[in-house]
Image (cartoon, rainbow, N blue to C red; front, side, top):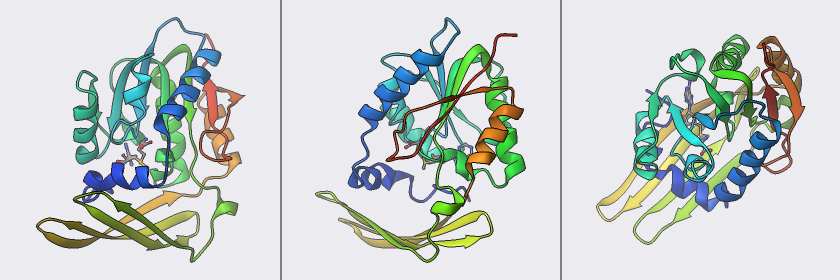
Length: 239
Ligand SMILES: C[S@@+](CC[C@H](N)C(=O)[O-])C[C@H]1O[C@@H](n2cnc3c(N)ncnc32)[C@H](O)[C@@H]1O
């Protein structure tokens, strides 16, 4: 079963409850692309685009496409951005048969790669899908030293006709964080509970730098969009 297949419908409400500002982030991301991009085009691919919350804003400045492994997330994204092409694909091994001027992979989506080899393969795939002078922007998830074993977490969304609770206690198996989310969702027809396990890689700065350099990128320093965390901005040199 794919990670978000049971929770996709509740994703936006839970993220909104955390106060994430997609509009503001999208301005920062767009500005970074325009600052570093050396190719003339405007084609942008959002990998691990989820429900299309960044694309909704980025499409005002770029010709946007999205890619995600989860059908439920993509169907919310397609409703939100009706004219954008969406690709149901695994970021580890995708081949869209075209190249973009910018690829973004945001809000820690990259950490869903299962091991360091697949992570590097994914970054190399981004390079293959960029034109010379194109830019890849990757927003990392937690680094190994930021992980707090046994941390108790909860998120609640309180909408008029839907109440959602999501809780987990963080566990770690070497460099993989295991988030066993317990959901409780109340709607007019009753309350349902389910669990969903997410496995995310705890990747170090060295992992990111190595992957970008091996894929042929020149690294630029980005600005943080996720409270205090730097972005990785790679530019693909001209031939
Ligand atoms: C934390 S969500 C972020 C979604 C979106 N970028 C955002 O900012 O709201 C992670 C996303 O990565 C997607 N994902 C996980 N593994 C993937 C894979 N192997 N290939 C493509 N997408 C994947 C999930 O389906 C989910 O939509």
